[in-house]
Amino acid sequence: MNSTQKARSLTGTVAFIAAVGLALTGCTNTGTTAGNSSAPETQQTVQAASGPTCSLDQYKGKTIDLKNAIVGFSQSEKEDNPFRIAETQSVTDEAAKIGVKKFIKTNAQSTLSKQISDIQDLISQGAQVLIVAPLDSTGLEPALKAARAKNIPVITVDRKLDSGACSNYVSFLGSNFVQQGQRAADQLIKGTGGKGNVAVLLGASGNGVTTDRTSGFLDQMKAKAPDMKIVAQQTGNFDRATGQTVTEQLLQSNPGITAIYAENDEMGLGAQAAIIAAGKAPGKDIQIYSIDGTKNAVQQIVAGAYNGVIESNPRFGPLAFATLKSFLAGTPVGQGIVISDGEYDPSNAAQKVDSAF
Image (cartoon, rainbow, N blue to C red; front, side, top):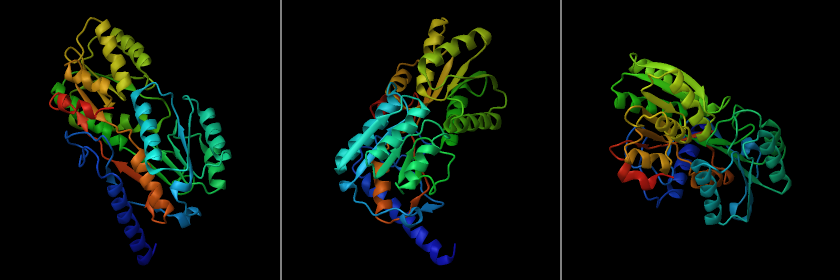
C-alpha cells in the first residue's frame, strides 16, 4: 500500500468512526470504556476501528440506499436466552427505525445446517444486504460463497469467522473476547484475594468466543494469581441446564471449589442453582463470575448471591446499520470493529441493573 492509499484508508476509517458516533448519539449512557466499572451501555460504542479496512470497490459491491433495500438477518441460536433476544430485538428495531424497504429475519435454532439454508433462503428472497450472527467460527462457507457470488455485503456480529474479512464478508462487529476473559479473571482475583480453587465452565466447543474467553482468563490467572488453582474445566455449552448439571458433578468430584468462572451468564446461573442444591451459599461459600450482562445475573449480584459480571453488549442494531450505511456509501470500514463493554460488581450493580438486558 503506497502513501496515497494509506491516507485514503485512514481518512475512510476516521469518517466511519465519525459516522458511527453520529448514529449512536442520543443513547442513554455513553462513553463507557473497557476496563472500568462505569455504566454499561444500553447501546454500543466503538472501542477500536483501526487496522485493515474494506471498501465497496474492493468488495465489488453496488451503492445501495438502505431505505430501498431488502435486508436479511440470520440469527444463530434459539431465542431462549436474554443475549439472543436482545440482539434480535436491537437489529429488528434499528431496521424499522431507519425504514428499510423490507426486513427478513430467520433463526437457525442452534443448527449449523439450518443457518446455511437460512442464509441461502434469504438470498433467494432477494436480500441485498445480510447481517449474520454466526453459530460457529467455521462451517458457514457454503452460505458465504452464495452471498459472495452475488457480491452481497455480509456483516457478522458477536462471533468471528475464520474466513477472511473483505473476502467472504465485509466486517466483524463484536467484543474483544480475550479481554473479557482477562477482566473476568481480574474480578475474580479481586473478590477472592487471589486464593482458592477455581472451576471453569467453558462455552461451546469449536467456538471462537469460547477459545478467546478461556485463553484470556487462564493467562491472566497465571500471570496475576499464581497461588490460585484451576481444579476443573468442563464444557457447559453456554446453556443454563447444562451448566447446572456440570457444576453438580464438579462439586461432587472437587468439594474444595471456592470460585466458578462461567463463560456466559446462563451457565453462571445454572452453577448458582447447583451450589444452592449442594447446601452452600452462592456468592459467599462459592463465588461466581461470568460474562454477558443479563438482568437475571446482575440482579443476583444485587442480592449478594453472585459476585461479578463482565458485559458483552448484544445491541448490535445501530452499529451494524451505521457500518452498512458507511460501506454502501463508499466509505471504507474496519474489517474488525471492537465495541466497548462495561462490567458489574457489588459496588455498582444496584445502580446499573436497569442497563442490563
